[in-house]
Length: 406
Image 1 (cartoon, rainbow, N blue to C red):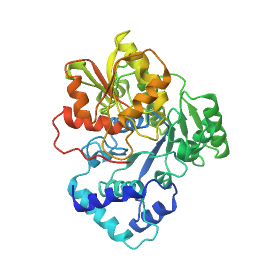
Image 2: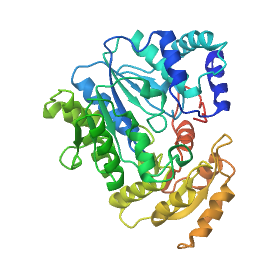
Image 3: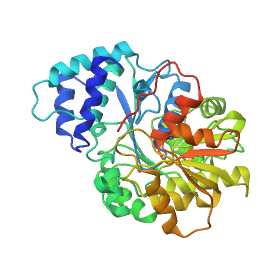
Image 4: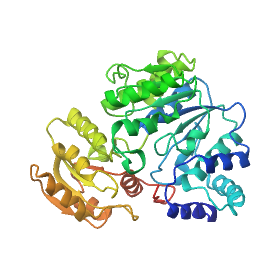
């Protein structure tokens, strides 16, 4: 890790501070975004990253060079900033961060880790002369750093309960934060939502005189094979396709098929060891239910050994409850960093559910959990941070694992 990336990582100690002022000031200093660059902005609780990945592939199939900004990364920071050809390089990270570091050196209200990462991404996209960029919000939408841009289309994926300490403790409050990305006259594309969330989105779209396009059915994976596994990915793909249509792209069937089969998005029901090991970033109750549903669709009543770690600020009880129907045994562990819940806390949360008893094992680190389940059917989930560590251990990597708090 270079000195400037190390500096960026050090900014994580100041936490998350929602607001647009710091980002606007930083982008102005960098003369960003570049004139003529067009954006698609994606918010939601679950499925944002997959939807962004599909959107990028669709635009590439349409002949458009397209940048992609997502978070968090799984193994290395470079994953967050990429285009259709490659990820941002280590040298480009150091050079870009060096400029930003000099600009903010004397700021009393210094920008956050995510705000700097976003500015670095826009700077790289400008240098690459990319006409299109797909942006995933980091947290919420209304006060997220990515909300400083004016998009050509806004996409809102399924909204559920997550990050409630920042976004609110009711679905309408959370939906209001997500719907904060809606801009005047800019098309809004959404799909299957809880009626409370949909009401908020519709009201905001009406207020902003923004056309609201509601996807009514997912892409059928049996009719159009997709690289991403699970029925929920059909909804994500449908949102992405509808967004490109709203922007005037009409891809022929073969291009759609190429895009959906060509999407690569690690850590989302990713199969390793000939299917014995599955990795999935599900980290909230709704995502856990979807993950369990996907497992049952593929494996019926067969259960699996669950390797689970979770962040302290997540709904751990809801997460475990969603996963319970597919658990043959539980292997609780933790990922590096202060946000990780202790394995003993996960055990206590499971006890409180008073569900069907299954064997429970506690492991101080992922390495122990992997050793205990070698050669068995196992599902690694509960946190993208855990999934990233697992990928770095289970697959040969060009880069070492760079764990992140955000």
